[in-house]
Length: 182
Length: 332
Image (cartoon, rainbow over all chains, first blue to last red):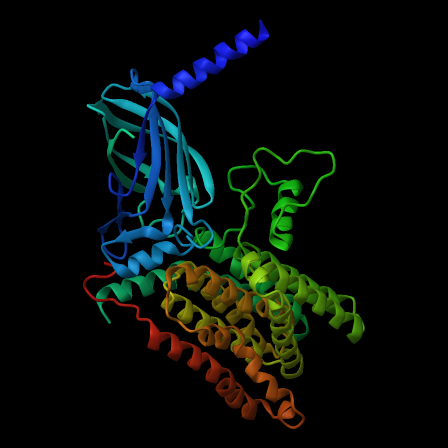
């Protein structure tokens, strides 16, 4: 009986895995961009992003709330519209990429929201892990996963606190995924 | 200079230098006014502490002094974080599983302010207890060796196992030169030399595009200026404050160089070394003959001696990297 039950459970697991849709996230199909604003010495904004984004997304093929996303970001691939700012962002004033070369997001749940979905997970950045929930439009059609999201996060939650009062606390993030099924 | 430079300079003056210097100077002058020059060691210790506390209160985003701002302070957390810094791992606990939610691992710069405070305490105790020279120098040597270990990044220790000893030696040398001259001269010139070192460190670090490093150096610059002025007026010994400076100055440069190297800046290592050890250039002034020069005859050569490495540091940094205040830059 025990053997039979084990076989049933294993078959279920293997079968489940076989039916799960998996999407590989690569720098070609996934972009993470940000806009930082500041008030001193004069108001302004800077655009930037990360070139080294990779990860995976899986779901059961039926319900998008079963979506599980893992994203790794190589923080050394950060870029902005100004070379000197890119250099500055790599220091411990902001991301401290020498000591924290990678950021990671691992989703824990995806729920239906008023418009689209709300993705919740843990974001590790600058050596600190915090829970993050952001709204997203998600669609899987003809074997293509499309996800787009725009939201703001508070940099102080991850200990990125330098320049308080000069650099705004909230940073706008724009995430876009257009991935084909594996 | 473009207008934005003056805005930034104004912010630094009013939000960092003046709060630090103001508190440091006020405490130094007050204690020396009440007790005279013989109270200068106590006044100097209190002055740098007040200066750094005041500066940190106004600019709370520069010096990270808490183990974890999200959780209450605990000895266990402190021991864990110190264990990481000393050995690259948390101290083992027999029979206890590792904590599920450990405090964040701290980089060497985190310890700077605490080590400077510890050096200040060591120097104050040496004086308060009238310890014999041998015991006093043993305590200073132990402190310098400990600071050298903690301030050297784990990765640097793996690549260059001798580095903590070199850093410790540098700290001890700086400590010896500054404390000896402060005790002999009692005129604030040694404290002024430390301030010049901090100024050079600040300029070098901003050329490495590391603003927080520059801010940390400017805290040191403003904090030691108070004792320098007080000692000049009341002819007092500022050695206690300079013990803190002897750890803080090489430390801010060492950790700053390590932290800023992430951005591939071209500021040469020589620049950082010259800034961090600038006060050691006063060593010739300890030679017989020179150390007994009258006040009017010694301050200028002393200033020239410390300015040589400081200007080399700044010149090399400015040659290799620019702080562009043009139209399309990070300050825009």
